[in-house]
Amino acid sequence: MNSLKGKRVLVTGGARRIGRGLAMALGRAGADVAITYRGSIEEAEHVVVDLNGLGVRALAVACDVHHEWSVENAIEDAAVALSGIDILINNAGRFETETLERITLEQWDEMFATNTRGPFLVARHAYKHLKRTRGRIINIGSLGGIHPWSTHAHYCTSKAALHMLSQTMAKAWAPDISVNCVAPGMIVTSGDISIGYEHFAEKTPMKRNGTVDDVAAAVLFFSTCPSFITGQILSVDGGLGL
Image (cartoon, rainbow, N blue to C red; front, side, top):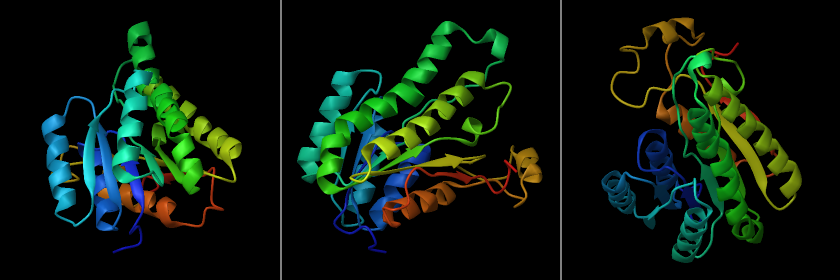
């Protein structure tokens, strides 16, 4: 339960859905947790309260990963409040369904600004803190970055770029910082994990859809494993991508 006790973690997009689940799992493991949010201030405040209830330090900072000044301010606020950063979870992301021929230039640029440029900016500004602590970066990619989905071309391409960015970071920033990537498949974030998504469960060798806890387990692994493990992309998909 205390595998991360004393560690200081920053989770981008930690107010809702998978991000919230990751923040809570890290808090339950004993880490002090800072989360960022863009518009979900009430949800972010609830996460902080829940994390405090676990007996760990927690804070929420506003951050729009589209703007470098916002990223820089958020990183510094988190680092000051926690007295450093040991682990960065680049979770903030965007998902959208659209046929390839109907994707607009604005949609394409928005997807890359959030899913690829955003993690780059966050990691670059967190670099000095992580280098000081010989820390870790865990990027949240996607099964869509490994396998093409015909109605998600801009999303899949942005996540594929994030996967390559993860490996490039791992090589560029070794041996000071380890960098890995978790690539979730079909993850249901609320309610019954089968209702409305039965067709995905049927196609999955493990015969169920994934949960936030499944993703959190992979993040916890990369947070605690030997730093010699770096540059890896771990699919959390129940075998759906096979």
